[in-house]
Image (cartoon, rainbow, N blue to C red; front, side, top):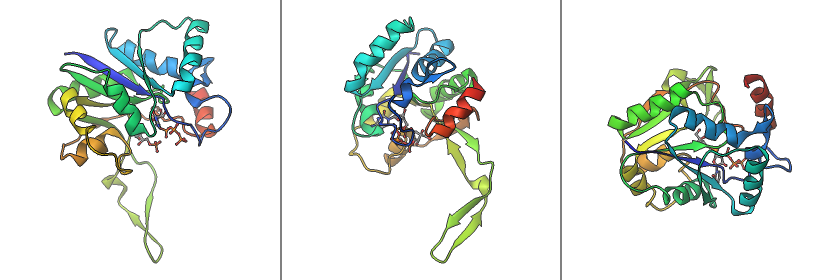
Length: 219
Ligand SMILES: Nc1ccn([C@@H]2O[C@H](COP(=O)(O)OP(=O)(O)OP(=O)(O)O)[C@@H](O)[C@H]2O)c(=O)n1
Ligand SMILES: C[C@](O)(CO)[C@H](O)COP(=O)(O)O
């Protein structure tokens, strides 16, 4: 079974702020993106990795690879206007049959077990998403105020989201809408069924400066 992973790092990182794009920030002394790519090679040393980066950051990334002696092979695709467009650009580098995962470049703490669980389940389920439980009480905002809802009705969604290649390509041929917040929502819009598997709680998305503090504890 051919395995590919598209690592998306084409965003602007507005919520993180700062001068250095968040995917390049050092965590435990090394750029986040290198740790993320290594997690997939630790799972499968023959995986085909596609890194999606804004065109304006590609030369800097190549410099970082030299500086940090980072030699794991990867194709580089151009970042797009939204995450959807970035994934679509990455998918152009995926051919043939097999499985393709899509993973946020800023989730370096995904566990090997979770990556393996997603690719394993996708062999039969075709569209697999890792999730974790909601650990706090959830309130739904209503017109008059708000109300508590049963938290067990909800899950928090992570990546890698892993799919049959042909299914994901077909899904990404749809017109973009802003309800596409992840890859599962794109497949679902086409009528595809999504299989949930366990994620890992450490698999946080580095979104705000607070997350960087947590990252230094997790490393
Ligand atoms: N046009 C985009 C937007 C997002 N992403 C990627 O999708 C992942 C999840 O997105 P998020 O954390 O929201 O990143 P940003 O869009 O960069 O952050 P912000 O919304 O704060 O600007 C990130 O790895 C990000 O680089 C991408 O590849 N291309
Ligand atoms: C794909 C994702 O990381 C799953 O949790 C998430 O949907 C990305 O959303 P964001 O608003 O762009 O951070």
